[in-house]
Length: 349
Figure 1 (cartoon, rainbow, N blue to C red):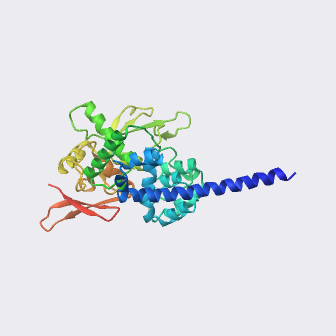
Figure 2 (figure 1 turned 120 degrees about the vertical axis):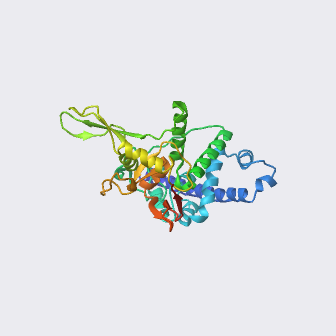
Figure 3 (figure 1 turned 180 degrees about the horizontal axis):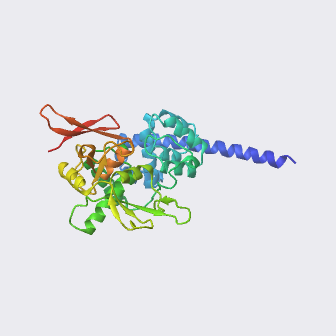
């Protein structure tokens, strides 16, 4: 009676061992493929690009080759991930997911999460995280479906053009790749497309409109059904139009979180552009409270500064700090301190 269960356990053990060996081989492949690129060995073998080499000599798709190259390039700086991948504890697809969010400080926690969860669960955890954030179980994630993943396929030449456009957008904002995820950059590009379709005036009005509704039965007021992250909510609180749709004499009234006259004065003072040094963005500008309203901040001009959507999000993610500075001659500027320690001042006036 025990013959069948014993046979099943034996086959399962052999299968697990085979899969671990395959993952270890993938680790070697990622390392070697990266070495081919770094030393331009594909040119010596007669191939114009690494992807031609991968497809024709290794029977890898462009997507597989790109994933292995990305992982192979990160492994030297991530020893825990390197070890787990080399031992076959995680696959290259899990490693590819991890490099989107891990840093040396969070590496151990993310590698543990990768070994304890399925690929599908890990993908969902990564999609709801930002670079440098420790993993959290999906059931404990208060953000719900505020973050999601979008996957598209396109010609390789179009993908190269898209990467160049994202790099240009990051350069214009003065941010590195790790400081602006691709989703945020794509959303910023989409905003610019919408602007081009709607008119000639630079869109500097409020990007958020908070709809307040009140249930006639339970009396609970809440926002619209769309789920938003805490960061986006904080951005909206800074600078938004508020439409009151509760029953009563104020139904349909529109107010603004910042008085229009003060908002116009702040935009004029900052030159109608983002106040972060090096950023040239003039589209969809937000006015940010240096000291939040919840912490007692006011609408005084000294507490307000103009930011583009990308830098505004960085501030509310805790990855960018701003403060006023003065030089010996009395000039006023905004000093920006980035997460990597870089500081720069943009002088106003």
